[in-house]
Image 1 (cartoon, rainbow over the protein chains, first blue to last red):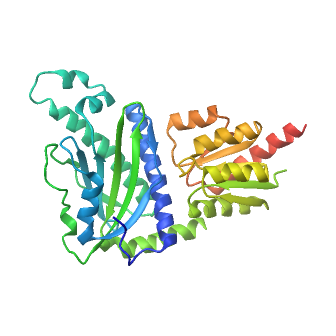
Image 2: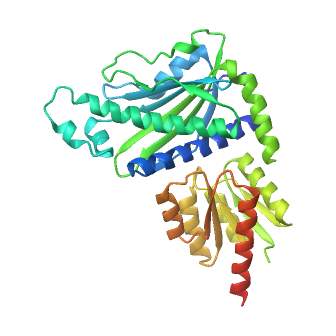
Image 3: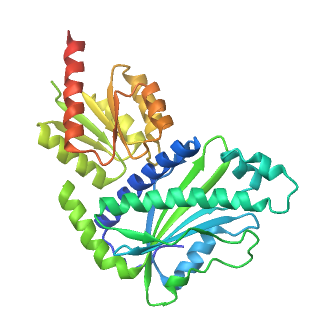
Length: 214
Length: 127
């Protein structure tokens, strides 16, 4: 789906956001690679403003929910307000288990075997989303608080529906980066959704960021 | 003495930020490229004294662009400026012959330091 025609952010502002996302996710993956010894291959971030009316369909088209899709969500609050979604569109538990060498847990016959995998994913989500947002807030000189990361049920047949954008007049800013965990056959993407209540602040913050570097 | 510099980055803002820092250090003939492929092509035609190269780019990424640049000129001074600061990324580009790696956003001090190092290397190679 294309971005909405009435763009709220200028091309320059979107360029800055793209670069900030690039820096932030690069830092986040470096943190992750130190903790779990995994190499993450990054892509060029994509920035879009999308009306709330179209946001659900954009996300659901992007994610193409499968039975084994895993989505970790963590919300953040402050002047910069929104939600981070770490999405693994098509993943199996064995692949995830190898990340932290939790194969013993996964191969057991214990009916609770799903729990460690979800905990691994929540931890990865917490590290990536937290580090990414943390770097963005650092670059834009603000502070946020976080909700605990949560994982969507793996057997969901429902479409992703994000609670904060129910007002169809509103617009969301979507920043997307795709990534691959090298040698693990794991692909995914990180979406950062910014609420339109933050747009005025964000534009000012981007202006100040520009002033400090240009 | 560094006269010409090639800046390869898909982000116009990142190029502007870097060029501003470069201009604070000295006066250079600066050439810009928007992706790795264009970077390799401009490297061939301009033969810059120093190249600043991003890693995460469309068309041709910085890893492959670095390899191609070093094939063109094994002595090329290529400084990788990247947000991807994973140890393996740094190890990979240094293994491919990068002169140094600078973390984004590059501070004027980091730029100044690496330009001084580059100048020393050029002087040594000129004998």
